[in-house]
Image (tube, rainbow, N blue to C red; front, top):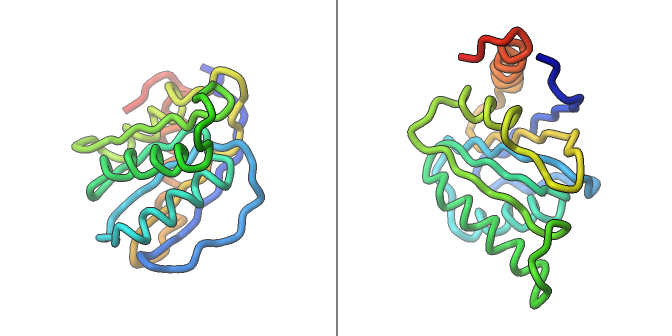
Length: 152
């Protein structure tokens, strides 16, 4: 199986930390939540996710369903009274009680936008310790399994 071309970036974002500056680019965002977060900080991060060009957000980990809602509200705030269209809609999903590999699978096989090819994938890791090597290894293993036709 041939998967779409993509570029993956990892951002370590411990709870309460300042948000990095990113160029607004159409992207998919996978939010991995392994720390408790305040609702104010979650709202700030959700607004940032939308402002960076996210058009498909997948949340996994602690209270991940609240991230689904928070990003939905941030997008509604961004578009105001405008009609929700394919161009301004941010699709959101949450993946409770699933292994992280399933989120990576979903990202590869199901996270599509009707009008744009979202080649940039941002993995936002809300955890105490930076672990880019482990997360990117797991991501790439899932991608490789899909390419070989035997996803886990």
